[in-house]
Amino acid sequence: MIRNIEHSRRSIGVNFRGDGTAEILVWAPNVKKVCLRLLDNNKLLRLQEQEYGYWLCTTNLLRPGDLYSFVLDDQKEFPDPASLSQPEGVHGPSQAVDLNHFQWNDQLWKNIPIDEYIFYELHVGTFTDKGTFRAIEKKIPYLLSLGITAIEIMPVAQFPGSRNWGYDGVFPFAVQQSYGGAQGLQYLVDICHTHGLAVVLDVVYNHLGPEGNYIQEYAPYFTDKYKTPWGNAVNFDDAGSDGVRHYFIENALMWFRDFHIDALRIDAAHAIKDFSPTHILREMRQHVDQYIHESRSIHHLITEVDLNDNRFISPYEQGGYGMDAQWCDEFHHALRVTTGHERTGYYADYDGVRHLAKAYRDAYVYDGIYSPHRQKTFGTKTDEHPGHQFVVFSQNHDQVGNRMLGERTSQLVNFELAKLMAGATLVSPYLPLLFMGEEYGETHPFLYFVSHSDEELVQSIRQGRKKEFASFHIAGEAPDPQSEETFQQSKLQWELIDKDQHAVLLSYYKKLIALRKENPALRHLDRKQLEVQCNEENKTLQLHRWHREQHVRCLMNFSDTLQPFTVAWPHRWQKILDSADPEFLGPSASSETLWESQVITLPPHAIVLYAATYG
Figure (cartoon, rainbow, N blue to C red):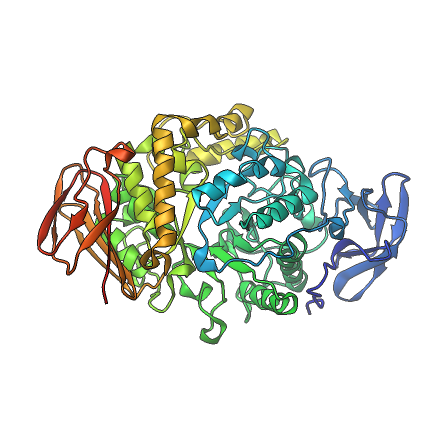
């Protein structure tokens, strides 16, 4: 049986009441004694056993800022599995934190509707030179001028050392110390809200990292019932799973309640193994909805999932898990192959512009059809799912950082093709996501990096990277993930935004995003008000979107040669964007106005948008 969850306050770990006393709750069902050690005076406080393996203590001896640890059966001593702070790293003691101490200034903030989200994914450590939450504040005016409405922060749960993507976190409740800790994140969210920016946080519920993973010493948080790429799966449906479910539901609620996070992006939800009658994501959704009702706030749950299974985003009444949206990798894969990416690894399933056209129409390319790469029929239909349930991108941390050399799009394609890829993404009937630096053509790579203290583990990671790239037939050696140089090479070069092509590309992105916001046909994500045609031989695509009387037509030439488009559209059409315009350092501008029965020729790797109003 799961312990009762109070949506209005956090119950597990160390929490401070209004009178300053600390309430301490830890789940350790397989031990006979639990004590809390106060490190400043070495005093031991014994916890009292409760139902279902929980242990409880209330005391005025533990104050905010104090260091502590738990002693199990008078023998083993570990940090708190629900620690809010690890000032000495993953192997050190926990630190008591009062999350209610922060003075919020975002009382007037109201989360924007999800269909208005324009995501900007960033990694705290490499987004700025200082690599902290505070340093991000100085970039908020820049993000607003770009047109971003939501920043998406890669995972911040405490990980080993100071350099990591964040997916090796081992303290899901503790905010990475080198970034600025809990108060630093609260401050960033507060300042973003006062400027009108939503904040999305990437969380990892499918695994924990290998170093400093002491959580398994307390309870059956993992099960050998299922295997994942990271080893034993998190125990969401095996013996003892009630406490595990409680732990992660509490975590999701904490981010919304105590950090005012607007949306969570749940990493690799396909690796969450749960055959319970009520899937953990569905149960999490129910608790989040209850919190939303009680707090009168708005929060979203977004999943990364590669199963093409619409249960994740289907509503309760249809047996779904009720997620608000999901990352849609297939749009990215189809776009990449269309723009010349080799069909190796998982790209082998995509044949170019035909599949890109299908991604525009159907979201999932594989929606119940045979997948040669998987060697089976794969996917489900998404006909009744609105466009705002799919997040698309031309690049993200995975698709850049999982390349051996971490090359960004700007290093893989020419300038015209980079503009075309941006346009293809931002005119889609889905939620667009930009990866930090893509908008000005950042030339530094985004490499995979770690800072583990276990040399055997480091060697294992190096070998794992080499094996991963074998499926893509890539020769050579990957940069050393453990090297600080690898991390430093991945930092953004902000001085580029005012230079040459970088400045032009930035102005192009600003124009694209502004058009998306201003034009009802682009802003409204109605997938039923969309037509798409492609010419596989010419590698061209025409996209027609409309809302009421306002229409936008997008012509895209993915080929290396000039391509004609026969226009047979009613009414008069006015050009609103042309990637080939000299304004954007393009080779030649297209006609400003188009009429019925006209032929327009696009230069290689160009996109042009025309708008018209008619009933």
